[in-house]
Length: 423
Image 1 (cartoon, one colour):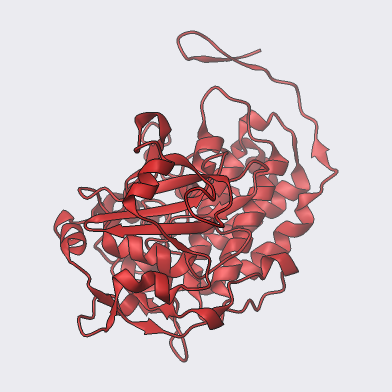
Image 2: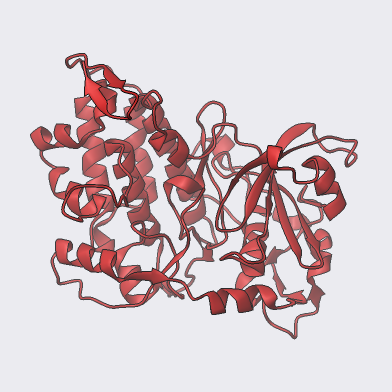
């Protein structure tokens, strides 16, 4: 389902050429140590520190996009202190800490009932955290619980993630509510079992929709709607009084509802942003190959501009219809960013890299603006990248367009052997 977590351990100078930097990034990705991950999930994690926290959006957004859970009724957990053994608040008391947040603490038996005992027929997929199951809940399971289809994520005890990632999901999604963040309904903490329940997103991930074989191409308007929605989700995180750095922005973590509204999911790697005079946070390098910002890979310094780079990669995937990492690509081993970024500012060359499945059905002026936006987001220098507020301002006027280029009609037929032929 989602790409496996990757770790990077190397340095290179920002003075090097972009091509050289990109090649080094691609050649130096190595797997995260299983030892470290296993030790994380084997800890008992008896307690956590509670601190007060609140969020307020600074970037102008619609009123519906400013909605956050009221913080007066519960306290915000501090992820950085999660392993402090001197803490007095036991993790079993999370339900008390989140009183008033409408976050449910489910039993394992209740989640078995909701998912038909985690049956294979209910399985939606599997990612780095573990398998995800489709389920159904109503007030028969819990009084006051809305009747709805849900997605239940169950931690794989032998997987690449552990208790810390599970807790990060609760810390962030348990307190933040926004139209472009997936809604966390509840959680389960029982013995070694760690589960999370979310609203069900019927369209799945952007990755599945955009790169699905033998299906109609995603229309330009839908791509722009998704790009704008995901950008608004990042604005909400970045512009809070206590900023949040998402750190794992990629196509597989953007989920889509029935109307293709984009919602950010999987907050296991999210970090509290810098505060006060600090301009960055330093952290162990984690992420997914192809999406991580070069300065983060080099130094471990994480800022909101790191998310902007990752956003630029996804914007490039939306433009080209190509995966950022594709071993079957015949372009001399170049990454998508290395191959496409030099072409983004040239209108004639740009047309050659835009997803051919669109068959020319896109506005050329709008495409040029999106291409320039992607070019800026992908700058190797963080200060040269726009803020996510700036990104939203560029994308909002592009939602309605009237300069669609009508190119020659090309029908792509797929033969029995999988080869494509233009007719």
